[in-house]
Image (cartoon, rainbow, N blue to C red; front, side):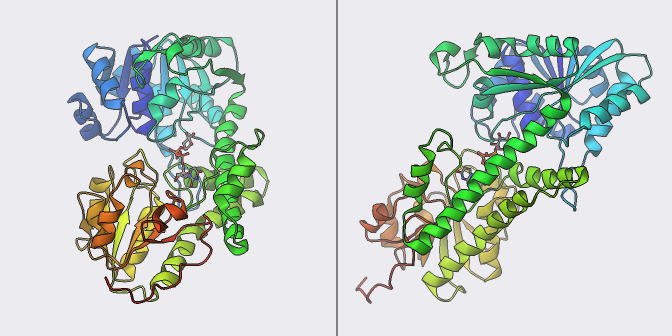
Length: 464
Ligand code: UDX
């Protein structure tokens, strides 16, 4: 099936490359000429593990093309995936201008039969607006089928998530659209692919047949928002439990593991810390609150999920103040800037929120992140010192702050870092370590709920 992807962002680029990988001819189009030119040169503008190899392989096989000529890409395709951004407006509502713009473009230049598949995260009933817009602006009498196929790709593991989905959700109002989507995803549903993540056939890399969930477009659109807001709820619940554990002197990680072992709860997304960031959860939560309000439902529960998450940075800064006394004119080492490990994305990153708050207090910062340095350099002032290793952030530092739980930081040479620090104090915003792991190396350790209720007592004026 000839496919067109409109929008070469995290979702469109990853989805287009993977659809080509399973055998479909794919043309990815975007209005950003610089981005398309870079992609045509084989330069990938985002970090996603395995993406560069998948793009290169399919580009050289002639299955994956990039163009700014959307009309030509639309005309050549049997099915068109709409993967454009739906960023939040000032009031938190999803901005659908790009969705409407590309829908009208499809209507104006498509001929024949086309399957239009909404993949962007959109408010419920967007597919109905797309149907009406296509009917209103089509010039050639083209016939459109409209479907909703929400994505569940996590940044940093998008390729893995495409080939190992728990479920494929298809919203449509009839057979032709459903048949088209079944044909598109058949290799993933049947395990008929060579997994690019493991370089092994599907049946040798833990692939399981995904559940194929066919429903209305309205229900499919709601599934995406309902799923992301539930995952956010789990995280805020974990953070609330962590705060209670600190007050009670309990070990939050033990308590949360204890509840997560119940198969009805599950251990994932119960990790307490600086909370959720990125360009999905915060955006989708705000959008879902607005969607519910417009439907006449006051989603109070989600407002509390947002409120708990919004406190995490301030709680962390309070712990830092309790440990350092005066937050001014001190050097701090910062490990982690990305909103989570595995990605270079710093959008709405809690780590960057901590960094900005410390800069506002005239703190001197030495920072390191395995992937996000270039993006952070564009947003941080010149006085921030960008280091070339985790150890280097420790130089003359009064404390080292772990703000993103990159596995590399566990392998850092902490005894060497201790020797370079003015004070062996670690504040672990992501509970990357257990308290005793660093304490036994002579560090004062402060976690977020991980059994370190109050900051460690000030050490006696030990000889250094
Ligand atoms: C999310 C959804 O997981 C994905 O299905 C959807 O398609 C897009 O949004 P993503 O935002 O890339 O993916 O990251 P995710 O791994 O879900 O983490 C979101 C945030 O929650 C990160 O800031 C992460 O640090 C935080 N998190 C995650 C926690 O604080 N605790 C946890 O236990 C898990």
